[in-house]
Image (cartoon, helix red, strand yellow):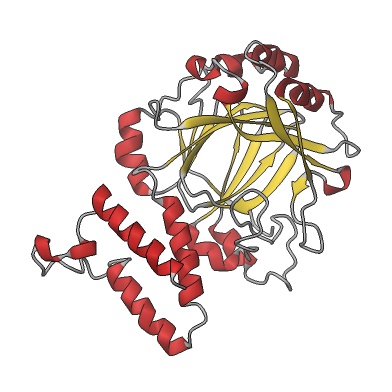
Amino acid sequence: MNAPLQPLRELDGLDLRTFREEVVPAYQPVVVRGLVADWPAVRAASTEQGAWDYLAQFDRGRPAEAFVAPPETRGRYFYRDDMRGFNFERRVGPFGDIVRDIAGLPDSESAPAVYIGSVPTAEVLPGFDAAHAMPLLPPPLAIPRIWIGNRSEVSAHFDLSDNIACVVAGRRRFTLFPPDQVANLYVGPLDHTMAGQPASMAPLKSPDPDRFPRFGDALGAALTAELGPGDAIYIPTLWWHHVEALSPFNILVNYWWEDPPARAGEAFESMVHAILGIANLPPERRRAWRAMFNHYVFREAGDPVAHLAPEHRGILGPPTPQLRERIRQFLMRSLGRR
């Protein structure tokens, strides 16, 4: 990187009202220093042994999935060179055994990269949730998930839900890109992904300017922050984020939620459907459909049916559960005929 990246906005304190009424509507990521500094797990995690001793009291021997990458990857979880698979394996074992193995790995280039990712704490650490309240998301709005590993690097990707990620142990560096940088991130396949969402193919460090000539523009728009124990970051949906675990032992707890619920996944599927129906049309037809989408979907000119009485607005009326189900059934019948 030729120039330092812009720092993420930071807040030293944040209450629920300000978060819901000011931060979320602004659709900008923020770092909240010390948001969960009083969590018992954060206090216990001043040492690796203290972290494990604390988690062990909740452990019931339940299984978890570990992602294991060989030493030559240097912790960068990614595709294999031939793109037919990935440079890591998935292994299942008792949660506590995997955590002990991670804590026992040497901090050297000869060690594999190992992490447990996105495991609901209620499944593997029953009782942990009750002892670690999230002040910005009153239950049951979001399910806490735990991530534990050694040093690692995950390429820029987006989530389909808003995300609050809290560092419990170790240090993490987040590098974020606004959604409008998607064309400059050189995104990999939409349907062959490492963990559900597509990821940038351009390495953050020393990207090849011949292969990724526009990635420098993405870096010009990037925001970054390094978080320590007790710090949290809010990442709005569709913001791309590259994540590095910088310490030999790291714990993070995150919360994904949708407000309003159950919409983001449908939006992604709608985009894929549009790829099927529109992406390969001649340019003049794509331009015509862009005008239709701008009017009816993105509503750049305002409400497209403001001139109609409410009883005549059909599927463009308020999105009640009944209307959403009616549209869903219409789409399922239509797709079933193709």
